[in-house]
Image 1 (cartoon, one colour):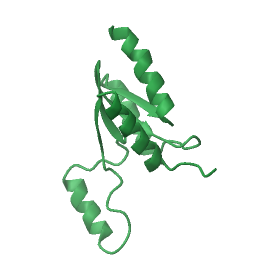
Image 2 (tube, helix red, strand yellow; image 1 turned 90 degrees about the vertical axis):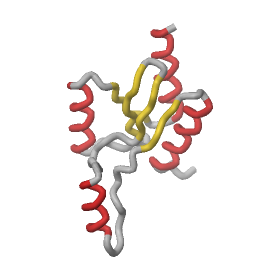
Image 3 (cartoon, helix red, strand yellow; image 1 turned 45 degrees about the horizontal axis):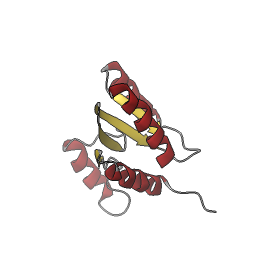
Image 4 (cartoon, helix red, strand yellow; image 1 turned 60 degrees about the vertical axis):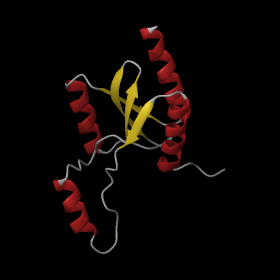
Length: 116
């Protein structure tokens, strides 16, 4: 069986969160991609607030807003992603790395018990 890409995992996570009525949105921080004019477009996006390393999703958990970084089972964070995680932790902003819908489900269930 072929391994799922981060994009596939993220899509499944978004569908799951929507099914639980948890609001989330993506952060399209991968830039403009390749091809002609990509460097110019990436420069434009940076002036508009693009920040490499920002987590993939902003999630409005029942207990507060936080960031979710999606990785494949064997994926690792880049240095910029680690820096963003460190920044979140310093400001008391929730940040979690997940690798599957199951990870999100467990995280949501574990934290939901604290607010009930």
